[in-house]
Length: 134
Image (cartoon, rainbow, N blue to C red; front, side, top):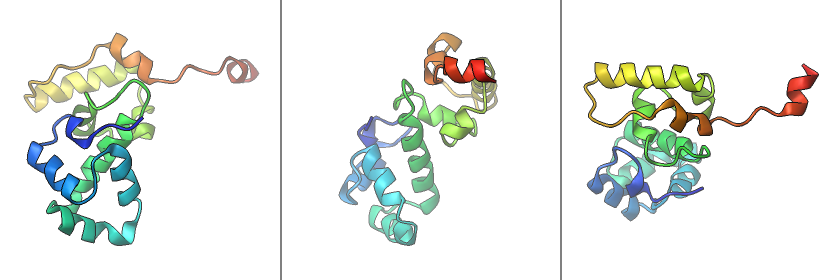
């Protein structure tokens, strides 16, 4: 699913506007343009944003595509060191919420941390056929 960049958690309105002027209005635009590694520096210059910030926004765009995550918690996930779906799925729902709570306290964040019940749907259901074969 694609989302407007302005909906991502912790993106500043002026950043969203700079991205829009550079041709990035949605998470799909961000992923498509960022995929062209040789052109990243030019993209950063065109958007007037550091390459590092664009890398963060690209990571948030990937996270937003995970089923049921959306744009609401992507900034918090990134702040907790979760920079993509693979890192997200390295944790159980319970361990992820614990990590998010620790990070929120450590960084004195005011954003609400999702509950375990809110996080569970982010994870794919195990395939019963594969589970029984193991």
